Length: 203
Image (cartoon, rainbow, N blue to C red; front, side):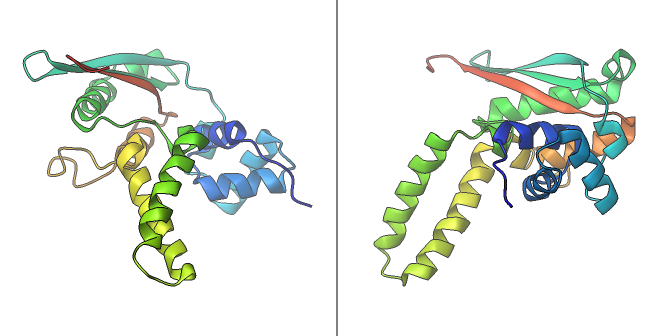
């Protein structure tokens, strides 16, 4: 029997394991909604990129800043890890600064797909469905078009899904891929907790 899994539980499991959305949902279903059991399910299936690290909570970290365009655009980012030792390393601090620079340049709206609120997603879906309906395609084709465009929209607004603005330097990796790489290098769970972007004259 299928049980209701909350977006918050999926988000929590993903932060602790690095698993994908669908894998995390499936694991929670299998575990009856128990996050600790879901971690075991993911570990057994080999889908957790950092099962052992994911058991430890990221409670250390830093707030990094970036100011651009003569002081007209700026960003603050909180990036967390497990120990103060890692938080003070050059590699960790450089990553946090790179994320802050990216936020200033790309203006993402959400950290992860789990953070996208239903209202924003539904509003975008309405627009995309109206656009697809005017293109004269069959309904089943329209839905596939809408799904593809929604996925592209999520890539545009979700920080972890965006390629770093300096694609040459970072080999076209997404922020999520760079975070996973840092977690592998440091042996710690790395979480981009939140960000804020400021622009002179902006809301």
